[in-house]
Image (tube, rainbow, N blue to C red; front, side, top):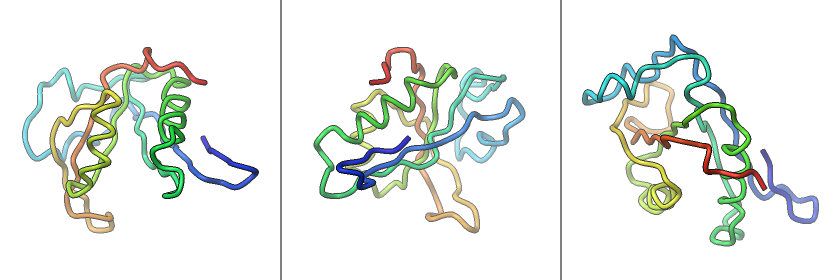
Length: 129
């Protein structure tokens, strides 16, 4: 999903569906309920990357991208990861209905050593615009 202003790319959001046999939840630093980490085909969409140009933040561009992408998905829920130091970003996600469920290691090639893991338990309330 992309956002443009006068043909200029100003934002994007993309991800993919998690496979039923994903190892996504195996590196959580603390246990969570089994029903949270159980997967099946079509259960969880991973919002992998999401950005809006600095000059347009706070103007609804990010929310429109978020709602359009997730509202178009067939999965019942979504997950994402955020660097722990990104307080403003985490506050926005929480305002949009996400909840932190734990932390996970970033891995040797990741942008950070640790990430906060968020879950949005439903997508059906999002209407693509």
